[in-house]
Length: 331
Image (cartoon, rainbow, N blue to C red; front, top):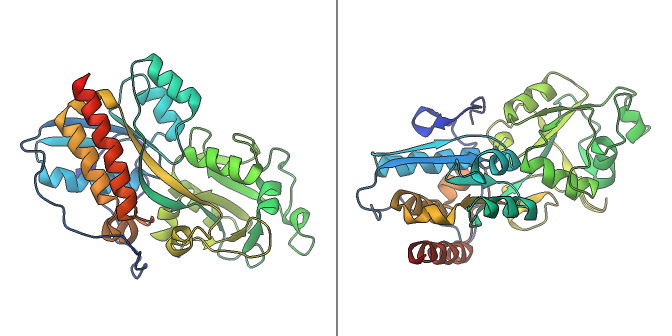
């Protein structure tokens, strides 16, 4: 999946790479077509900000929505989950914010102080992926403890792989990871390091998954982490690491392992519309469309590289959305 777009992007200008094929049959997930024109004649703009992890799914959904509604222009900006909440969504400058972790209490308070009411809609499940250089044949399995040694706050520029395991090369560990505005950063630090935001400062931070892959590709002793979608669509570029929370059993990132909850770095992905803007038909219909397509194996799994919602989960999410639409229109 192309990953070099850092500013606001019209989905019509975004060309998605073909999926890596042969994914899996996910029970309870449906494909379906793009459906009918449930929203009538829609027009206007929709501005979506937030997570770089949710970004490829959002632009795929936006493209299909625009095919149905030619007078609607949907723009998606990759700002990071936190960056989107703080700089765009909570101030009221974007209609929807994607996030690769749940909204924080402080963000919710910030939004509400500005009259913005976020509505949480789960749209997929990710298998956050740790990668190493293809020449790395030693660190292909890592425990949470080892990951915490590499990415924790005490990990400095002089740390070598031999510090992690004396049988490994005495070569410096070079890190490439998510920026502090990213939900991936928040999830990874809380899950692996035990506290959100606790992270070494000796790394190359970015919101661009492509930069992480390029950094690891160019360094035989490099390591990085990001959402599964970019790895899924670029599997020859780097080697995925099997991880274990306890060291007893290791699991590779895959849609199967994320769907079964075996993979310890699996996480839900969300989109958050402002409830007040659900009075606008184009925004309400876009959110309905997003939730409907969240069950599609063809879109979510085969094309983008995430685990789709089950039908029952999508029904639950749709109930949340419809309740929010009703509240917005009655308020």
